[in-house]
Image 1 (tube, helix red, strand yellow):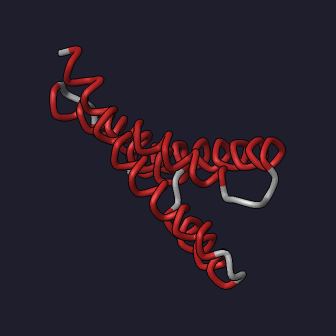
Image 2 (image 1 turned 90 degrees about the vertical axis):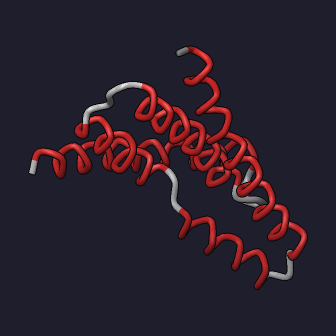
Amino acid sequence: MINLLFVALGGSIGAVLRYLVSILMFQLFGSGFPFGTLLVNILGSFSMGMIYALGQATHVSPELKALVGVGLLGALTTFSTFSNETLLLMQEGQLLKAIMNVVLNLSLCLFMVYLGQQLIFSRL
């Protein structure tokens, strides 16, 4: 039961962070490309890599995993938003932007998970 509370707390923090990042990126770059989703996916992937590596190398409490790994990062990054924005770009005839969105999200987020893991593993 306590882990559910940690997931809820982390989720509320992640959702607010995601909203704030989306607003900031919209103000900086406009609505021509979903930079907000891209940024939260990159940051979330990097953080997930670090949390995973910490969990492998040291003892990370189930509560911390629930708070950060499931709650915060689960709410911060959303594959459904990425998918919807990509489909909307395709439906608007912006195929190049849709492809760029897929390639950037997948390649950068995979790299950031790797980088997050390496940052932790190299320090142990």
